[in-house]
Length: 350
Ligand SMILES: Cc1cc2nc3c(=O)[nH]c(=O)nc-3n(C[C@H](O)[C@H](O)[C@H](O)COP(=O)(O)OP(=O)(O)OC[C@H]3O[C@@H](n4cnc5c(N)ncnc54)[C@H](O)[C@@H]3O)c2cc1C
Image 1 (tube, protein in one colour):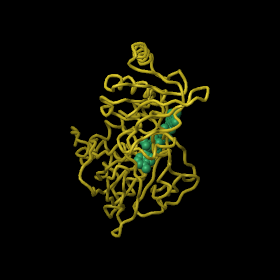
Image 2 (image 1 turned 45 degrees about the vertical axis):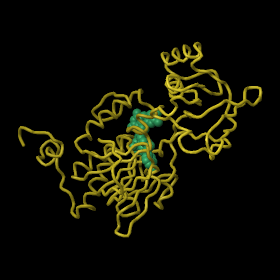
Image 3 (image 1 turned 135 degrees about the horizontal axis):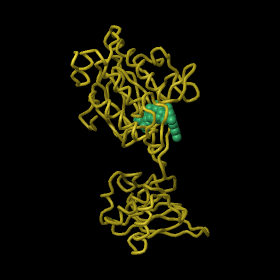
Image 4 (image 1 turned 90 degrees about the vertical axis):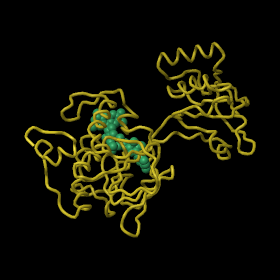
């Protein structure tokens, strides 16, 4: 799959919201029906819960794979969907979904991307994985480009005074990366106990010892800005004393957690924060919108990857009929020359 940021609005037959295991397999099943799609995910990578919550842990109940880790399953799915050539839009949340006059759906993302889709597949799982926000007075007055949540790149701190806020692997890695670039680097966290791999902790200690990273133990209480430009971070120590630290760039790594967010505002029938679907088609109560995976509810639903795969298959067959006007024929990947062409494989008996 490719990561694109092409011209807007994008016209597409199918939009998949969520690139967890269910969304990825949806891409594959739509591809087998000859339907190409665009995929949007709030995370900077694909894989949903498997990648974000248990990448290195084993899964034992995927048919035909006795054991694989979350990351390995995601890699296998990526390999499987590669021939479908879906366009991937990462690090953005689908914020709005509205019906257009011609019956298509207008989706708008948090990054301003607009898509006009004939069909939509909501594979939003337990919600969009978004960074935990820093909630302190003054945060709303900062101009863009000074507060960064879990940034992939730290070039913006070059030559500036930087504070990294957080205590996990990402916070420690960000502080180490800042130490190479920033004028000064401070790692600010509520405890002097960081959760990171041994090599990262060792490197942090070296940089602390050399003075390249200053570690401050406390809580941020306020941000100070002049004309919108961050000047200092106010923090409180264990004794309740307030202090100030000069800062031009603030990097916040407080973790990433799922939020149902906008899905609940799209006017679709829901029950206990889950979308109600017809399990024969995975159709919601809106024409052309299907939902699969952990986000859905129907009698007998189980929140398992295997169930998401089945639902993606049901949704693809139903959507093919909706988009192409006739019931699709059942074809086997083993024997169908049409499917071999889609998959880009040659078969001796074809
Ligand atoms: C610790 C743990 C272990 C597990 N082990 C197993 C197991 O062994 N076997 C098994 O079958 N299941 C297991 N599960 C459950 C399994 O992970 C889920 O059933 C599966 O991930 C659901 O897939 P999904 O694609 O529906 O949703 P998710 O994996 O949650 O992916 C949804 C994606 O949608 C994105 N998203 C949501 N809303 C938006 C939006 N508005 N805009 C853009 N993107 C959005 C999210 O960022 C996310 O990446 C486990 C779960 C956990 C937490």
